[in-house]
Image (tube, one colour):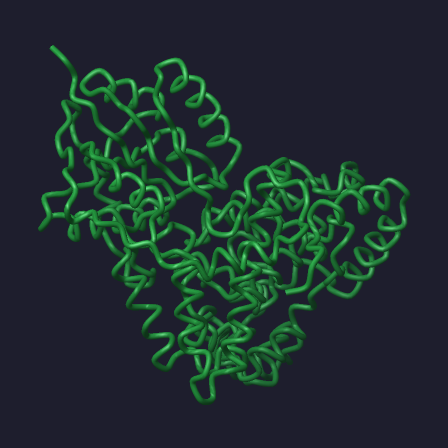
Length: 488
């Protein structure tokens, strides 16, 4: 019996129907389409991911199927390793072409894709992959990269005619039934899905984003004024091009120019860092500047306790702890607070950035490998090319949360402290402690490090390391490969 010939659209971090190059290409072919999402056990248990990610993915898949259902379409969700799943499909159907986006992913997905390329070649299956945003696969130079990015972002939005396509909606495999936790929403987290992403973006341009440039650094105000599109971009509920063209459509709105200029810069920055990771994926495991290979991070026993205090938001520095507890509870904090958390880990605690990489990835709802690792290294000061920034968490608290609103929300044990003392609870007087029934060391921890001494040590060490010949030699290689050669 002849097997039916089909094409497959493999969804990964591109959980949408609009501006989807792989889906558009498949719809232009005369063959029936099997739309597929694979729940890969190796990814589910990978140390970068946690429940919040898979819950967001499941919400996104549910919305896709809500959109597809009236047109007799469906994304089939199958559990198994990708090689095995495609082998099972091939036993029932004859796969002609697999359409997907290129994945700017972790080493685990890169290794999987190399295996699949060999398997598909042996089985005479065509695998057509499409670029992710403005990222160029295997690029070893940034010459004309900005020009390319602008061209991609201004190309017409792809609108495939999937409503008229014939879909394969049945396989012999049992449909994946997610764990109960995946199906339970949490009102403190953003909800996944293409329709949700479009609504959040529309709300940003309707009013929320008008003060974007003024509120972007505030841990409290940024939660409202920032676009909040990062998880939708990370999981592909919306394309960067769709967001950018919406920005251009509002470019001449009265009173918005500064906000939109700042937002446009962030969108450009998004692909810039992903291109860095695509061009040098080894930075998942090592410093991009190999001169920092033997950088003397702490390895003493106390470092383990300090790392745990940082992870739990119990360092004794209010803004650090409030940011970490907010991130644990909601999956989101703004960019400056993320930078401060990494700076505190690496510069005040002097702990290797790699020891915080998996933990932060699990917490960030918008975890994107291509942004995560370049940013970690930049904030840790191990690139050799970026400005060394050592954040003083108390100064940041006084500047960005002057009235302590954010701190009080996430550290309720400090809620009764006056504005003058909430950023420095270790300076509370015995009389104030009695009056407020607040005991430092019991209700809230003492600072786990002397901030001035630790910061000076790190500053001296980082700058001296930067003068090493091996670091300087690596700088030249990094600049030639990762720095844009043309201005925007």
